[in-house]
Amino acid sequence: EAGVAQSPRYKIIEKRQSVAFWCNPISGHATLYWYQQILGQGPKLLIQFQNNGVVDDSQLPKDRFSAERLKGVDSTLKIQPAKLEDSAVYLCASSTTLDRGRNGELFFGEGSRLTVL
Amino acid sequence: AQSVAQPEDQVNVAEGNPLTVKCTYSVSGNPYLFWYVQYPNRGLQFLLKYITGDNLVKGSYGFEAEFNKSQTSFHLKKPSALVSDSALYFCAVRDKGGNQFYFGTGTSLTVIP
Image (tube, rainbow over all chains, first blue to last red; front, side, top):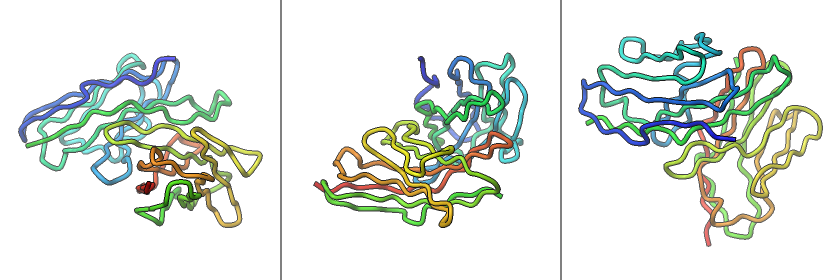
């Protein structure tokens, strides 16, 4: 079974520039998550999708961050304009949903490390 | 509100000794609990989970965890630590209603040769 795919693995940009990260979840996983992980901290949920609908985006800084999952499969997270404090690893994860009776764990991609200079 | 606490930022243990990484939780209802490991420059990898049943669950790489409902704890254990176990460990709880996961702040484990 193929894992969660993310790209790019590394990105360096200047502040006020824009960046986009892509994620392809495990086939059949309806739920997709984007997390931000700042060095030395645990993952912080940015947005959660169920198929192509948003379940939770309460911690997404909507003035600069946006995310979409148009066909309910892969997803893109965009930051525009970037700030220095956005330097972090952006982790994508997917899971099965409970309504199928399967208590699924999260499967993570390798992450996209963003450095904002 | 659901939450997870990992009281130790850092745990050091000698190679060959038993290790414990602590986790306590606060959830409404029965918890779904997970442990993940993160190696440098990698994503989080699933180690084990508790959903129901036996309080002692076994996972990958010889790790196990004990669910203790009265103490609301889910400590990660391994009988004999390896240097290669050195990594960052995260405890997580899943909200059954919303499919949301809540992560602890992580514990950095160092196994000393």
